[in-house]
Length: 151
Image (cartoon, rainbow, N blue to C red):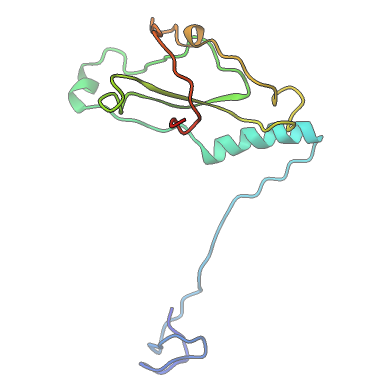
């Protein structure tokens, strides 16, 4: 903002050109602060859950208008059983089928670092055939990569 007391066209005390009348309050930054008071293990558990709610909310997706009008049941559920508590579904999409020879991208992420929680930091096991049995989805092959999908 321009300096309030600087004459028009002249530099003010804060090094800005003045217009002689700006009365803005400056930059305001707001954030959320949550304080968790508990044992280290429970605090890590709650911090991860709150972090996911705040920073990674569910994403709303849209379809073509004519598909939405004709759909009998627009709600789709693909998971037949919940994922383990320490695993998050990051991505399930087929946007790259043309570039990946028809493959669907599924990204699962482990939520906890090594030693962060006594039980949730351990490696997780996920049966993809059981988790995705809700829509009679059949898994033909699986290729495990890094979370970025490039290794």
